[in-house]
Length: 510
Image (cartoon, rainbow, N blue to C red; front, top):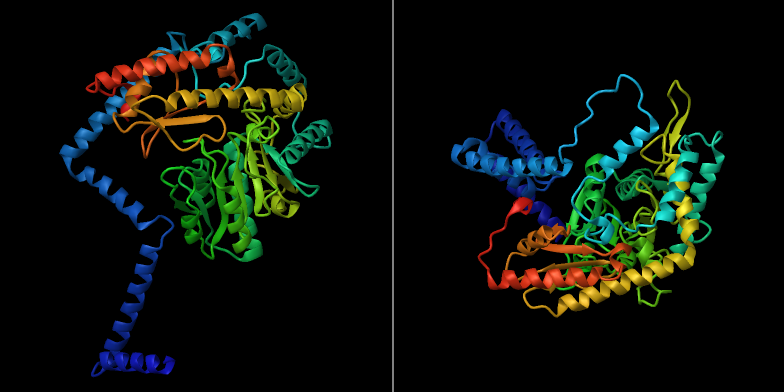
């Protein structure tokens, strides 16, 4: 059969070139090869053909004045709305545009700082905000302020000068390793936030794949619900992203699609616990199994709910395995500045072993300033943040986090159960931790978001499909907050259902 095919090809080629002069044969061959190479490069670029077609389609507006003018008018309206809202939030407080001639007194500086910090209309202290503010504890705030003052000048880039800060970072990482069921080989670093933790994991796997597996065109496979930080990392690090859909009813990653998306260039698989849009938890065990089957690292993004979900089993809630107990899980990102209640600018990236973490580091050996190495994106890092994060962990302890988790999850389930009884809306999937996402088949859900916004609630809007979510924090566990949200929700929902012609207004128009 093989020789039969080869002979057929030879006959086809000979018949094509029969009667042709040498220069014609050379020209046809060269043109065919160059055309094939061009087509291959055109079709199989890092950016898909569909994405490029979309961009070209929208670029056509530059050549059709009527369409361009209409789009520009709408964009101008939205831009003006954003600018007006931003100025309204400032409330006529003047901007400082240059240094004062003489230094200000500390009392005056404190007055100006308080004035700026207190700007804004949302009552975040009383639970009117989704996420963002995860706990208000005046004693903790005072403690962190004092500690940051003590450690504000420290920098772990200089371990010989500030060994104590490096010790604190190591202790924070080891505590997290234990919470996520790592062993003696499990390790990691602190970072400035979830985005950096994710970027560092992507960098580690890209370099590991290149040096160990020889992969020169890296790809990562992730569900469409994975955090946009992965897309940012892909842009920075030149990694191709293969997006897989979520299951229609559960809104969790489609495992069959994920397996089909795996290629010889795949450097990592991604799952979320939970994802940001819907608060649902991907089937990490199934993703772990894929990682083991194809020898591909698996990253679990627990940035949002990591410091809830690791306490949930002891708080009385069933949670499937998602951490280092699964053999395929090789890294976990978790934000300490969310449900660990550390100051903003602190997160953790953990690896199963030092071999993987090694590829996260950046080392320059040929610099005239000496050998330069840094574990994260930043060179210098704020030792005050590390010390304050360490202090937060010490302040609450295991029992404190357990009590906090129990209250948050109970409040989340209470709100979810009440919302499921309402007509006109539905809940996306099953909330795994603290995020409840809702939509509607009867009206545009942004109408409800805008109506609640008028009542002082700041919620998160979603797209593809349109939805809205509430991220429950410890602030929402205060007496009466959940019921006030539910009462306002039901009131505005009934108004919309009886007046379907209400237009969508405000910034959600975008």
